[in-house]
Image (cartoon, rainbow over all chains, first blue to last red; front, side, top):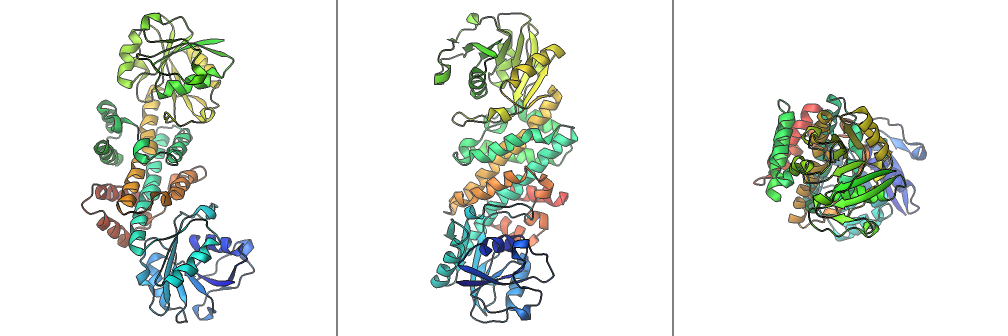
Length: 250
Length: 250
């Protein structure tokens, strides 16, 4: 039985806690958060603390606080030589305090408060200082995911950058698209089947194979028309730059 | 029984033909294409022609040739006062020849050769010069789709522009993401659950609500790190511009 403690209870840790709670191989000893949080019903029986001095013994401590607070927070854990990990894609393992054994497990998914995610399919990107701690983390996270992979801090930084493109930037393009439609009193829902299909295609086609549209066809007339429709909006420059990018690669 | 003829047999018309073939209310009289095409097995019994002079009588002629060939092609149809439509998102209805009654039905989806699409869910954007032709087209396309909507040429131009953002540009971001991973010997597949979830979220969240990441958090440290990783690549400017866009809206 592995004993774990969650330190910080934001989106990532709360999704992890719900998943680990269902595992018979894992005990959640405590959940710490700086301020009181209402726990999901399933987790109400787990002791909840708001004072770091009350943190108990455990095998793995899972820090899920904001990125720029991870380093400082890791120094406050009142133990030595325990396995302490954070769950952030954008922060190197090195920032963790030297007091304890360092590790990272980054669940490569975007968790939202009211959106349930099939956690079994979420890649868990594991890193630790020692081979034995790597094994501990791989075994632990295999309890909740079928895709546990070893990823170094350096690789994780690049994977995090790539994730910004498929998630944050893609979502921004959705928002531009929504603006264009609603400002013209057109129902954005009309675009949703296309939006879904665009993502679905990548399951069996490479993005290069899946590319279509005026930029790929080098259809100057349509591109001109679109740039004209976007005149005096901040989206014209986005259109121009992405069109140039596609043209160069096809 | 409505008699239809397909003029041009690219991705859109071939998907439409397969769907209409299954309807008992519609007869496909002929399929024309400039050059010989191998028809899908299901359609092999439909007469296939490569000469416009052989085009027969029908109720609706559906032009599916490249955008810049639509206007000229529509002049070659050897009939008058028939309902002739094209299926393009990027071309106004007006370009069709005055010889016949004009219409457009744009299936708002990206069709690929070897990818089947749930056509019932594809929005069919219908336009015609007369109310009676609009009704004919709405009735006809209701045979294959549950989402038939009236959309003017002007609205369609904006919808087409918005579609470029959720489809072509989004796909380009996927390709950038793939480049970043594979150039660093990281498996792009690790990002696929995130990519899917990003699209899925838009079913129940607006893009603005769904936005996350360093730009939204105005996390200057992570943004700097990412720009540094992209130094001397064409993607640095894309990162900068999209980051600025997100920052402005949050």
